[in-house]
Image 1 (spheres, rainbow, N blue to C red):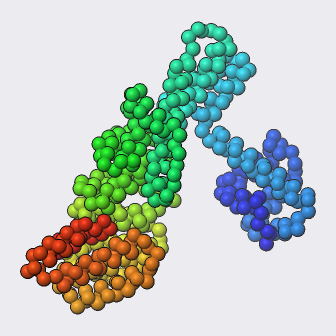
Image 2 (image 1 turned 120 degrees about the horizontal axis):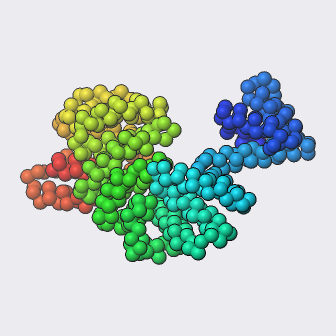
Image 3 (image 1 turned 90 degrees about the vertical axis):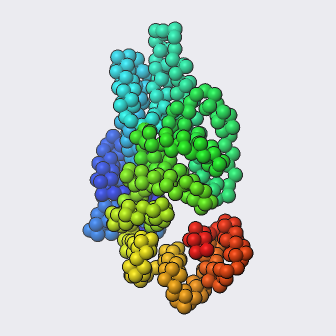
Amino acid sequence: MAEKNLLHEALSTLSVVEIREFGKFVRSPFFNNRPQLSEYFDAWVHAQSGQQALPNTRNADVSMRLTHSALLALLEKYWMYCEKFEDAERAKIRLAAVYRKRNLSKHFRITLREARQSRERRPWRHADYYHDLNLIEWEQYQYDTAARRTESLNLQSTSDLLDTAFIARKLRLACLARSHQAVYRADYKMGLLDAVLPYVETAGLLHIPAIGLYFHCYRFLNDSQAVSHFDSFKTMLFEHAESFPIEELRTLFLLAINFGIKKINESSEGWLRTTLELYQSALERKLLLENQHLSRFAFNNIVAIALRVGELDWTEQFILDYRSLLERQWREVTASLNLARVAYMRHDYPTALRHLQRSDYKDLLNNLIAKTLQLKIYFETDEYDLLDSHLTSMSTFIRRHTAIGYHRTNYSHIVYYTRQIMGLNFRDLQAVAELRSRIEQEEILTEKEWLLGRL
């Protein structure tokens, strides 16, 4: 087998369609006048289909190495060409510049008008929209100054659009940095951000979705008590969702969802319903799919939140509708676990236990969730001997897994406080009150509500 090299690694990423199109590119004399490049590429294509083997390149001579280098450069040129012309409307702006430089005034005006109209017809009003309008205005300015046909120039609109594009991008970057800091210690210097934030308010730019959304987002990410900013963000997000391409819209929803989960973990009131609504809207827009799959983590989160809200029928339908979008290796275990959670909430404990026994929980967190559900069922059905044995087994399991940080603390607390309740003398009101206070004060305890309910 031929040795892996930069060229072969790059070629291996091509899809069937790209192989065909790049073949045309290589054989075009406009792009390539070296026959050996097309010959080598054809040989590589045949090697992929098993028709022939490429020569071993481990000790390739200078000529072969030059061929590899030149073909890789041609592949890079092909990718740049595709990237450059992927957006036909933006290409029109570059075409207008060509007409301007060649003094083809009529062609320039028609092309620039078409570029402007194409941008206005598209629904997106993100930072790139304002950036492109700025490029159009800049072309218009250069044309007007060269032609000297007017004394009034469009420098104001050019400046305004440049500011809008910059501020939108700056605030978006600030939100991403702030969100990243929540999971990874990093000290990002945001430069002009301190000047941008007050300017947005004084200049009246909050009504622009590409600015207002990220402004409010940065405010609530920077101050978790700034609930009014979250409310403004959510209202604007739902009103202007169609103004953003899907990748950016996904980012906006995830920023809000992650904040909602943070507030839920802090036991803040009112955030369960809000976060569920965000999840539901994201599901309707297919924003949570990655490579056409829904992650099991998002799946579990949605079920957990919906159950706590009390949406049992919706949750069961969600599991049945979306289980096919889970990755195959996690599909049955995740679906069974969550159907068990629904059955538990309906007090149908036999069905819940049957679902729990249906799958092998190889995933550590799924295993802990399943064990916790069994714990609650044994407690609520007065199976105290089974519960005692189960708690001992669960403690051993948790001790063996030391690398799960937050989750190890959380599930250790669940086991500990369950045992405390089992041994509690409920006639001793002071002891009950003290245990209630200790549970309420725990910062890491996902089953706090259930434990307090047992008291």
